[in-house]
Length: 261
Image 1 (tube, helix red, strand yellow):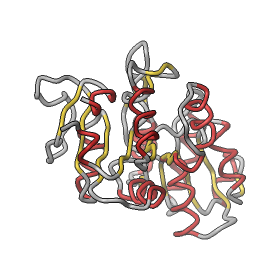
Image 2: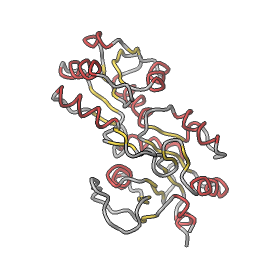
Image 3: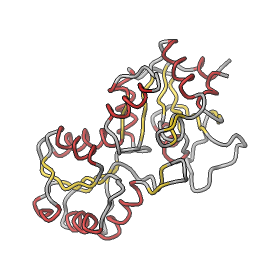
């Protein structure tokens, strides 16, 4: 029996499973097309906060994958939802992130303050981006040390890219936490918020599985919500250095296309 036949729905990571940078991994499109053809519900769950869900979806559609905007749940969209639920709509924030991330905050009704206005902030929202500066560390750390809630899209220290791992949001968050002496709240995997949001999108069918390339985020987070883990990566059964899930994956496959085997 093929893996695809065992489940009523799937959550699928993007970076390292479907994409490497903006390049599609071999066979990934075929596997997703088969999920659509069978009418199996699936959603993409990514810690990559650089793009809005609709931008991720547009990239997928450009390769012929049938996907709606709301089938993509990002650590950033989960952060927006959690901040609004916990701290209220329309609050003033200081934030670090890509232009797309900052635009999402504005669309959600948050007022993004200038860094020098950190004493007025009601939350500090951290997301990774390539132009991260000392000024951002300073403002975020000073606000957090003063008691302003610190929230971030994730703790992934790196993200997979074609030329090797790039620093992820976790590396930036670590600098802020070190300077502030405060630990932030994260919404990306393995935190439950992002998984719950994605399960809501697909109607929470059971049995369901999470397909990802990291033991410590994808597999560990899924296990806490009673989902099987399917690890994409080396097929030798050995742990991936620097990762520890405490829960072994149900399956280990070389690529997403192998769910069809």
